[in-house]
Image (cartoon, rainbow, N blue to C red; front, top):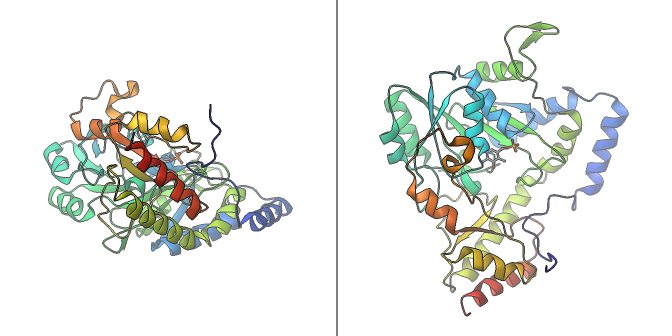
Length: 364
Ligand SMILES: *Cc1c(COP(=O)(O)O)cnc(C)c1O
């Protein structure tokens, strides 16, 4: 096995290391670890950075989705239309809420949920649409908003790969009822463990989610409703505050790397999915190849790590065997997609080496 020289992501500490260590020390010295000043400040700072009125810190991105669904009173007997191409957690959150996932295929170019397929999937049981802003690019929110308004549906945005992304200049997470974010270490804004948040402009929804994440308590030891236990902790919030201050710059770096990839790969036969929205934040940089597995091996032999997001369409997962789905475009994508190294610490030299290796593959 060739050692990895150019990793796909780099979730450890970089230029912010000293500030993160100081933040950890500050929390240790405070002796306060759950729901305190760090979470409160982070919520305010994250809402402001995201262009939303409210943010609520939670345990992870999956719970963020679940809590939005619960706060919208979605559950048993309700259908939620979602995409077959995402982390399976997008769909697992619907199942956790007790609702039924219904899959609408992706747009084969944009790779996010196809609005026409969403409209075709609507029945009297449909209550919400759960689009995923995949790889950091917003789904077609203009079309989805129009469909949701026409049919009286809620929109729950999975923003777990889309920190600071916009759709036609508007912040993701503020286009529907609420947006769910993950701070899993490799995400654009990553903790050093699990973490998540919900953003929304609706004060009542924010208050309900803040209560639901904390066991449904309206005040100490009074459980107004059966909530869950899913809180962002003080240590992760303190770490996230340090990194949030750098997120704009890191996002600019991701966009510059993506532009460099596009320029360099344009002359190769590897297909690069088009960019549909300038608000793309490039959580991942994906290419497509009919010889994906061979290309991945070719890069691995040169010490370049790549990943596949995702190898299996969600309805094809054994856990979803009971749900029928027609999604040919997603299945083709799952066989062709390859994620090249993409993270703010990736150097220009390493990017050039990746591009040369991709170009070289097609000379074989
Ligand atoms: C990471 C991710 C999730 C789940 O987030 P966790 O924090 O791991 O629970 C959900 N949806 C998408 C699109 C993701 O990328």
